[in-house]
Length: 267
Image (cartoon, rainbow, N blue to C red; front, side, top):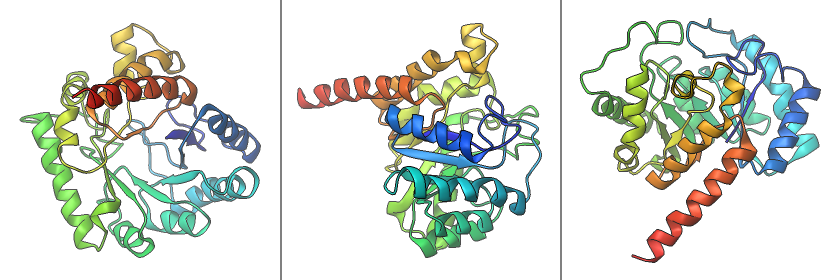
């Protein structure tokens, strides 16, 4: 899954792709580099970011969805990264295939009904609090168990809203209300999430804990570090990797997948 932020303020690429020309160029590069899903977002959810209205999100994302469909590809999967049902519904009507909601339907519960009505996949992520509050001293009794419990509750809410269980994808929410240590603990126990029997999405791309580990400052210098987490995640059974740098992570994914398949075939 390639990240296409059409925002002025996302943490590592804000303002780079918020015109149709720039967004289409980036989407085309992602397709060449081997992307399977393009995730389009019109609201930054970096720590302490402010929410963006549905009208503003629509103005940012819908022209990009339509342009990709009309000018680049009728077949690539497009996910809409939003917490708002109105944005999700309009994006789906214009050619998006997937809803990616960092709030798992808690911000706007109607988004669950939209997913059910369209019978489309929905990604339910774990977040502690909101983007404005999530990094204010997040605490857990047991981060792995607590995140799993929360995701299971989100699954039940989604099913009660009429969403087919086969359409549910889970995301442990690396960096969303987690400390450096929490992120590492979640990555060390990805198998626990895979055991939930839903496809798992992982988003570590260019995140601050990787800067800390590698003693680097710029998010765009983290393609290699992100690729390491991608390879480890594939070996653990993660199905979707949400990344900024598609080419590097596609290579890591393909190699890890081949090794994983060889391991299975030899058992």
